[in-house]
Length: 145
Image (cartoon, rainbow, N blue to C red):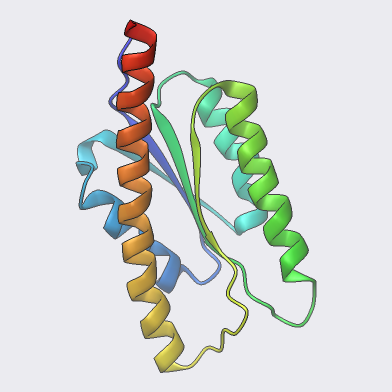
């Protein structure tokens, strides 16, 4: 069965930046084929990704977040847990789970940094869409062989 729907999960922490990934994703995959889900932060993405993948409705699930050093917690540990969780969700469900989860070493909420990362997230969203389309095509060909 060919799936033509994609799920896109986006963290609302730094939504002004993270939402740009969806813009990039929609440049390659029609909006009518994408279901969008918002979660509070990156840490909440893996569980929802796994639940959505288990439905069998989606060819792939893309997840976007910006994990920055806020000085309160070790952001690198959070980022690693998120990426590990996303990979595990894909492996356990057999549905590709793609990450647009970035952890910059130096991020400051200046106009300059925000502008750079907003543009970067558009590109990363396009890359996730390319990956989603390619893995869907590759898996279909492999299953048909």
